[in-house]
Length: 251
Image (cartoon, rainbow, N blue to C red):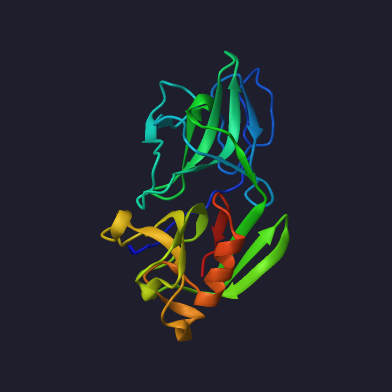
C-alpha cells in the first residue's frame, strides 16, 4: 500500500455576476464571472447534491470557459493508484454561441484550483447526495446522506508540523489495503494534497484510512492523513461512494 498524505484550502461561496446581456443565476462555490454573455447554472452545492463525471478525453482545463484562456491543468484518466480518475462538477456556462462548458475541481497542487472544460470532455454526470465532514476541532468525521447523519467516528489528524489541510475536497477512489497494517484494511484516496510532504507517493495525496495505533485516536498523530480505527474505516468504506464531497475544517 502506498502512503497516502494530505492537504487543501476552502472554496468560498460567491454569486456569479454574468456580464452585460447574460442571465444571472446562483453560482457554485468559487464560481467567478464567466465569459461575456454566458448563462451560469450551479450544478453542485457540495452537501446534498453533488455532480461528478469521468473524463471522456484528456482535455486542457482552462481558467475561463474559453478555448483561449490560460490552462490550469489537464483531465486525467487514472489516479496515482491507477484507479479511474473523476471530477466534481460545480457549474455550467452556456455561451451565446451555444457551446457549453463545465466548471470542475482540479485535484493536485496547489489545492483549491478550479477550471473549465468543454461539456464534451466529460462523460455522464452522476449525482451524489452524501457529504463527509471532518471536524478537526472535535476530531470527528460525520457522513451525511440527504442532510441526515448516517455515520460518525473519532479521528486522528495531522501534527502541527505536518498538518491536515482544511478545505473542500472529494473522494477519488476506494482502496482495499493488503499487507500493510499501518493503513488498516481500507483507505479512501481524496483530491487533497499535503502542503509539505511532496516526497510521498503520488506527490502527497491525502488519504482517510485505518491504523495499527488505535490508541492515538482521537488525536493529532499523523503526517497529514485522516486516521480512523479499523472498525470505523471499514464501516465508512462500505457506506461512502466515490464523488462524495469532503469538507475538512481548520483545527
